[in-house]
Length: 506
Image (tube, rainbow, N blue to C red; front, side, top):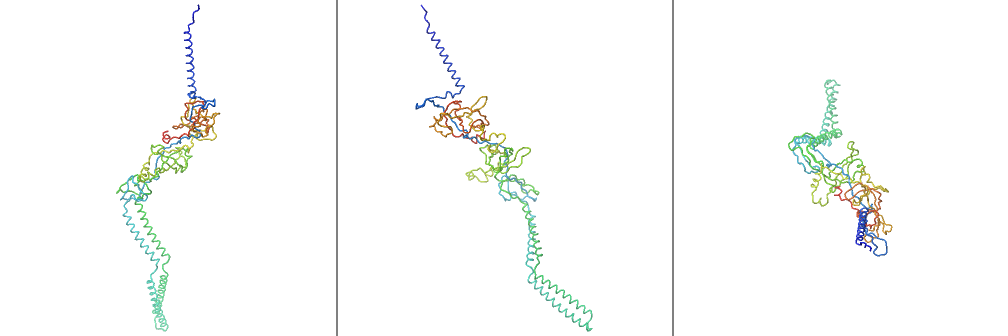
């Protein structure tokens, strides 16, 4: 009689082998899932709802955007400088003396033409009075020369001529009688000579009187009038010298501004050209910066930039305009000096609620502080950022992508997933179909592209790699897909740029 086979023992061996096989399959699947990425398990092939096709449609959705539609942040080069007044003047008087008035103090706002200080001018007042008298005398002499002799003077001269004419006639008759008597031997030779000399003298006087009369009738000579005018001009010049000395005895504001320094008080004795006050011109204020040559070559006068004062960032910067550029490079620092003008950045409501003097005082308070010049990369092309320049028809052109789109590659490199259209897809990437109604027909295949990360700026990164501008980049959902995986592309709007706060923090 044969012994029976123990059935329970065989069932136990079979159950152990089954359990080991199942555990092996589960372990292998888990390892494959980890090696190939979670996207392998994320795909859930399912038949179409209408049952008309045997092809499985993926239900995994990824958000994509065209490479050229992604806008990068506006980054800046930063250069340190100093805020300065457009004009900074030390005010003095050309004459020395005792200060009698200083009408301003530090911080006072003044307008162009305001009198700020005076010295004692008592001596100049006396000199001015003397000069005025000389002017009056010279003017009277000129008027007299121009008017000529008076009619009464001419009549007196005419009477004098007539008197001399009568005397000369009488003397001539007497001479003739003496000459007749001498011819008859009655008179003496002495009486004849006296009569002759008296007649000749009266004839000469008569001629002189007639010449004087003719001179009076002709009027004053041109040379005399010219001499009188010269004497008047000399008197006026003396008065102008006094006026110059008076103007040099006070300080007048040369422009609108604020008093920065007051060096002397009333009663002080100051010398010629000794500074008494210092004035800074009112806004707009300026700022000066030293810019490297390779960056300044791309700037020109009237370019618009941004300037922040003190420790303020780009979000608190003021608009500025380049107004001056030094033509040569400093041979020691290798920098070019540029000067910018800070443009008024107050809104209309601020201008209405605040007075001009308060706004001026605010900006004048910046003078002497450090300033930061923000030069956009778009305005420069230096050795350190030359790779930013976009070159057409280049497969290695730099593009901006969201930092979340970067995927770790092999050997410490980075990659980007590119969504390529499926051959059986009805909608091509970039066709503009972004609505959820067409999402099932927008099937793409995920491929990996190795890239070089050039720069990271907050939520955006600048990369370089074999990516065409028209290709679609996976910008969301990279953790759910892998190379070769089929997915549905959901088109996104262009990626937003960094805010000014994020850019400043970076």
